[in-house]
Image (tube, rainbow, N blue to C red):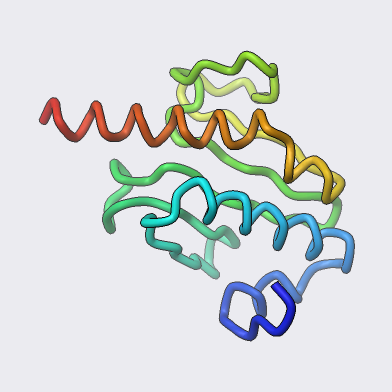
Length: 128
């Protein structure tokens, strides 16, 4: 959002302008889909995580910027329904969505994935 001056915005500012724009739009999408999730900047790992606790088990997703683009890493993404076919990766548990343009951060399939990830997290936490 215009005028944002928080540590996540400052973190994204370390990337090329086109990557910053995608990361910020993706951040808006994630925060819209997961309004109560905590946002956690991990400078050492160079990611911004979203979840409902401090542990890895409560992680829903991470924004992973790079010099060439942005990935939305989905914790336990291999277990999620993905009718839009957005998920990539060779991982057995965690997958990602690669984004190169701002419009890709607004695609409806992302909100579907985030909603499915939230529902899966809620089901896991109820089961424990």
